[in-house]
Image (cartoon, each protein chain N blue to C red):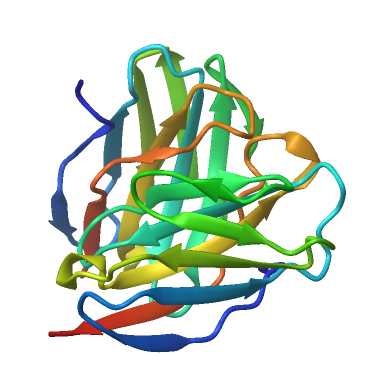
Length: 114
Length: 111
């Protein structure tokens, strides 16, 4: 079975540019999570969706960040405009629901904003 | 902030057992205990979870204290591929979205 698929794996862009990260969850999973990992702050939950509906976006750092889930098989995390402090590894994860179910993580997108 | 405490790092020799401790000082009755690990340059990977009883799976064993204020992840025979950062967490109120990753324990395995 395919796991969580993220694209691109690496992204380098200049500050001020729009960045779009993509995620395809595992088929049948109804929860999707976006995390960000930096050396300073570790792994932080940004937002999560249940059945394509955003449930908690309290971790989204500021209005420059937005996330959508137009259908059960696709989600995007967008940063506009991007800043150097947004440089991090962004992970997407999905799960089948109940808190006993493990979250399955993608390999992440390493984002560098110059 | 993470609600669990773990040692920053631990070392083990290859093929020896490893006991990774975790304190869950604020855990409540319905919270599950989860362990994940993160290998270098990869996303976190589920290891094991439990509620009250000790749990075993193909990767590891989880020992949960009677008062549930502490847990121990047991790798029965460490291999070089087990070198990773190990995270323990509680899931609050049984709902998703409340896995708060702390700094974890960085496990080094020596050949």
